[in-house]
Image 1 (tube, rainbow, N blue to C red):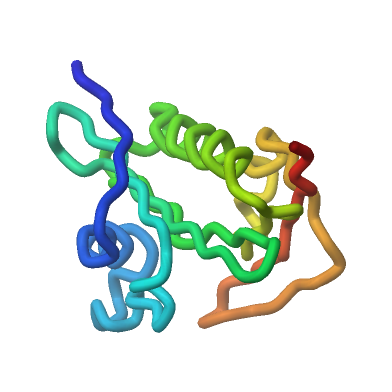
Image 2 (image 1 turned 180 degrees about the vertical axis):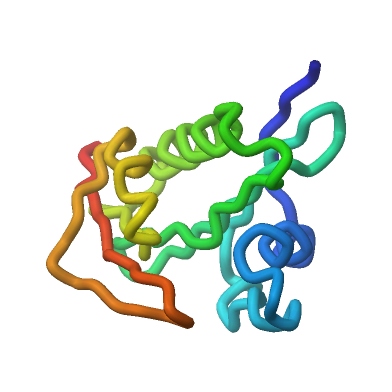
Length: 138
C-alpha cells in the first residue's frame, strides 16, 4: 500500500469535503470564499484521494479547516497522518498560532496535536463547535 501526502488544488478537496462533512447540502456549501488563497493537502492511498485538509494563513496565524477522511477509510489513522504533516508544515511558516473550529465531539482527537479548547463555541446547522488553538514555537 502506497501512502503519499501532497499539495492539491482547492477544487480537488470539494468532493471529499462534501461526501464526508455535509452530504445533505449542495456541494457549493463546502466551497470556501478563501479557498483560492489556501494551501490544500491531500493524502492518497494507492493514488486515490482519501483525506483532505486546508490551511489558511492570516497575519501570523494559521487556521486549518475542512479535515475530511473518506468514510470507508475512517479510524485507520489517515486523518492523523495528514494532520501530523500539516503541523510539520506549519513549523516552517512564520506563524505564532494554529487554530481550528473543531466539532465538539471531535475535540479529543485534536488534543493529540497539542490543541486546547478556548471559551469560544458556536453552533452551525445543529452541530456544536469549539475553537481550539495551539501556539507555534520556532
